[in-house]
Amino acid sequence: MSALILISVLAVLVLYLGLYNKKSWLAPLGILGLAGAIVLFATGWHIPHHLLAGMLEFDRFSIGFSIGMAAITLLIFLFGPDYYTRMQQHVAEQYALMLFSLVGGFLLSSYTNMLMLFLGIEILSIPLYVLAGAKKNSLRSTEASLKYFLLGSFATAFLLMGIALLYGLAGSFDLGVISAHIAGAGSSDLVLNFALFFVVTGLAFKVGAVPFHFWVPDVYQGAPTLVTTFMATVVKMAAFAGFYRFIDITGMPDALARIMVLLVLATLLVGNVAALRQTNFKRLMAYSSVAHSGFLLLALLTDTGPGSTVGATLLYYTFTYSLATAGLFVLFTIAKRANNGAEHNGIFQGLFAAKPWLALCGLAMFLSLAGIPLTAGFIAKYQVFLLAIGAGWLKVMGFGVLMALLGIYYYIMVARELFVPAEHPTTFVVTPLNGLVISACAIGVLLLGLWPALMAW
Amino acid sequence: MEDVMTAIRVVPLDHYLILCFLLFSIGMAGAMLRRNILIVIMCLELMLNSVNLLLVAFSAYHGDAGGQVMVFFIMLVAAAEVTVGLAILVQLKRNTEGVDINQLNRLKW
Image 1 (cartoon, rainbow over the protein chains, first blue to last red):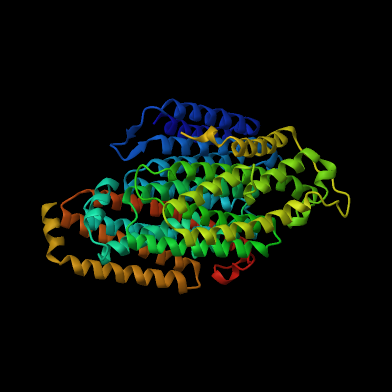
Image 2: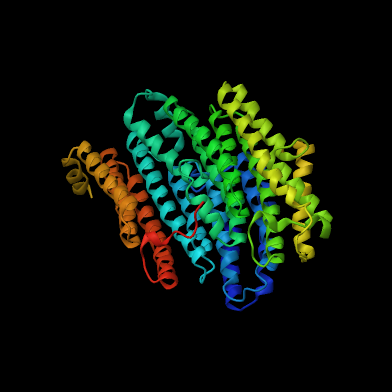
């Protein structure tokens, strides 16, 4: 509870500092508060506790996810002062909105009541609609923001319809009561199947699963890079935490499993194949995000109820994916500035000649996203495939392996650019803090790849 | 309060379900087919309100106040959401001089 209050109050404080134009204080204060929240969460590690009349449950899964999300936000805040150097107005709002959104993420990772699921998703999303449109004079940014808003509200309506139907059937919003009702009902209960379909549709929108992925590339490309980083990392972790809690408590009725298999296959296929033809780096990362959603959904598919290791695998996968993605977006911003705002994949050319250490860090992160052994991405995919074999989804797993191999191709294509000499001279300007963030992400990805036990619980 | 509950229960639950599904479908069709963004936002509100009606009906039939509390939360959040949406729309109007959804075509593939 104290961590939730801390982050909410921190966001209001940051807003107030904005009134007094203390731009240089914003990021340090945010970082201090986030570090405090991480410590507060960590102290509750051994004592699972309930909050708000049992509507939130902080067990190891939710504490792990909350710490992960706060840590990634901290890395993004470290990158913030440099990203916003030229921006003079409304900087405080950016940090504050990200913190508000983070609170929604905490709720999503710990809800045990459908009311909190709804509130969590909305608290997560509404600040993001504003953040995506943060570049007020850019039509692309506005367009991304509006698309995100329209499709996000549409998804919320679906989720709410599902929640209302579940309430009608079970007579309560509590997930325990709902799960007991589902266990008692037959698999041919039409209304129940409709309800589950609606809820899963709403959640699938948020995680960017095919066929509900249309907003992902547009929003990732149009939003400011820092916001894109936040969406690709923290929001993804939160959405999957929310999805997992729903699936874990309701179990996986046959009707739901059939929908999920289709989602997994479509997401893996479209994400990886569409990524092959992307030339804009942000769109490439967007389709990479869709493709990774496919692997994460495959892990969700194998969840058969409480007590499985799916939660730990999800945390490991999303956290290492977020580390690699956050580092690459910082690297992308550096390269984009060196190339006068161009966003194509070729902007990384000449990086190895100019800054060999950064290029090697970038390579490590690309390899991790591709899932090459010795990096965390490999261990993450390996664990997902292991879960799929254990649950008997052999054909789906085979398809997943095939798509993972396809994925290696487009990551290596971009990673190759790091080592190609530049056609025209470019100067990469790297502040010490940015170098620190990139190094931390790359080292984290390698360390977790060599010792996955670091994150086991 | 009890009178209201009985009044709601005069209509069979099936009728509420059918009405709400109809309203939801009309909202969904409008949100997908209409080209004016203001009307799309109105259709989204229609979808949310059909859910509200359904929740109130279920709440009365279950004799449980939880559903009505949820309705309050939905109204609150929908208001916050639409505030942000309209602000974004104003920004779009400033950038493009129009509120037609077909103008949103800069970001593709």
